[in-house]
Amino acid sequence: MNKKTPYILLIPLVFLGILFIYGVINGLLQSLGYIPAFNLTNITLDYYIELFSNPTLLDSLKLSLKISIVSSLLSVILGIILTASLIYTGHTEGRVIQIIKLAILIPHTIVALFSISILSQNGLLARILYNLGFINSQGDFPLLLYTKHSFGIILGFIWKQVPFVAYFSLSLMSNINKTLGEASENLGASKLKSFFYITLPLSMPAIRKSFLIILTFSFGAYDLPFLLGATIPNALPVQSYIEFLHPDLLHRPYAMAMNGLILLISWTMAGIYYLVTKKKKDKGDAHERY
Image 1: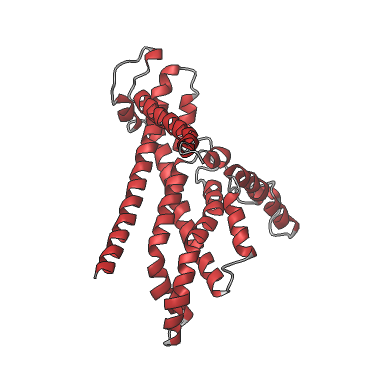
Image 2: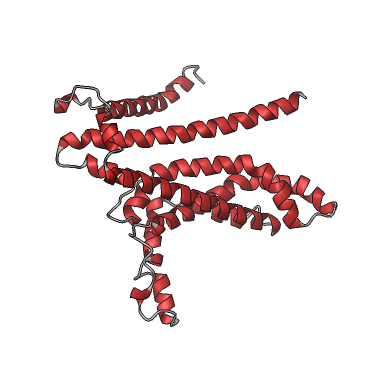
């Protein structure tokens, strides 16, 4: 093989990387009010300042934080329960794992379609409850989609994120349970006590990482909030897109400022993820030296 072949194969990746970096820098410049095409050439933080003085935009920020935090916490809890049930029933390999992988691969737009088909007042669940006599009409079914409480969005993220948490932590928790967990059970500990005092604490690094990953993703996600959310308030990514499409092109810096805020919070979450990972790695290296 030619020595230049690896470098040639890297060209598409480098090109995409340059485009990504250019897009980020250009977006940040526009968020600071620098868009020469619109005769905006003065760099200013006014657009960011106005974000925090605009009640609509503050509501969007609060909604995005609520969706990401609530869905991520519930996904982690349910993911741990799912992982524990797979471990203690012996389903750590085979078809169950393939089903979990398939759930991870399903696009969020398909999840939104399934959510509408199942959870809406004209959906499958409402029809089943009506036919069984639990509700007098399909209109009596609780409104889960398109509400200001964002139940539908949170349920959609849980649908996607629970399998991810389970798959992310299953291998580690299974290995811990096979060694230390079984050892503790041989010494008289119950399976429940062994799980809460040994398997779960030792698996927390992987669980924390999965939590930060899904928290960051759900905060900046556009598709589920757009397809399943209420008209007012909008999640921050959706509100940013609305501002971007505003007929008055002078609103473009506001849209980019929202994107800049999403980017800043996402970088903060990524920084926390890095620090958590580094701290655990440093502790592990220290234990190995001693």
